[in-house]
Image 1 (cartoon, chains in turn brown, yellow):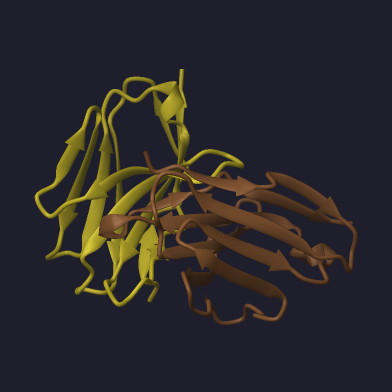
Image 2: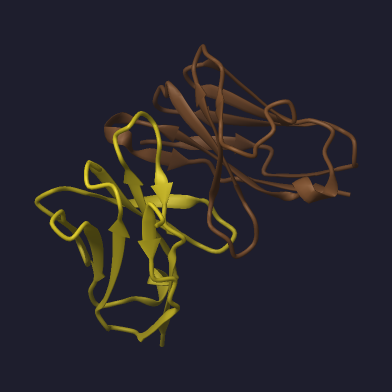
Length: 114
Length: 110
């Protein structure tokens, strides 16, 4: 159990466009999901905490108007990167929290902005 | 001081060796601890939750030392497939915050 999916797994877009990434918990309900970004050879960086039915909590330095998060149901959270720029190119990973604070990660989305 | 600190390594060990990683945390009130493994260009996968009494899963043993504020991961009889980065994760139980270590890189050599 504890499967989390992410879609798409890889996306290439042009600068200035928006990209939506979906994160789904397939076999459990998650009131809390997290969005991370990871640059090559660096550790995960938490971007925001997404709570079902309420506004996301963003980490310091993360622009909420640029990274729009919606957690509309107990199994789905979306991250939209608006007006993407090359510096937004990264590996975006979501996780869903299950009981006892265990987090299960999606397979990640590799975003390349040209 | 960082919330969670790990020795980044790299640890290069021969197949069959025993290797141990430590991870220190700064918040003494922390209650939940985890070890994750992350392969290159993949997502982290939960390896073990760390319980107060310690826990074992096959070749892997995790322990918690509250007095010294660290958790450990012991891998016995290392396999080539154990090569990965091992992440220590701590939840200080102040809401839904998690703190990740920077990871310890392990390479098991044939």
